[in-house]
Length: 153
Image (cartoon, rainbow, N blue to C red; front, side, top):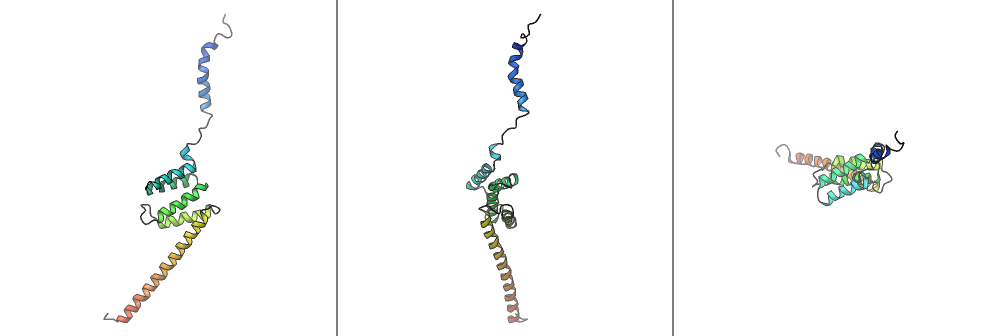
């Protein structure tokens, strides 16, 4: 006849493994540090500091795509707009820059970046108005030259 506790010594070494396997399916791993908005922002700023403008832009875009409501997203949008406006930037895209600034105003109106975004947008509107006025003046000047010189000009 077998004693009631006789099988326990053979199963006892398997108990930690069984518990570990059972627990793995129920526990969720904490997010990787690079997934936090602050870490993504820091990584993008590191790229920017190293002179990798395209890498920085990619980092800012990743942050905005993965954490659009975070406070860091407003800063990332502003930095992305600045990169897209910079003449020497490989990611230059003025229209996309203006859209990023509009997103700050719409999605992050209370952020510290909203007033700066509004100011840059106001300057962009003023610049567009000035460019239209310049084009009209150039057209008028061309017409005056044409009339002054006459048909033989």
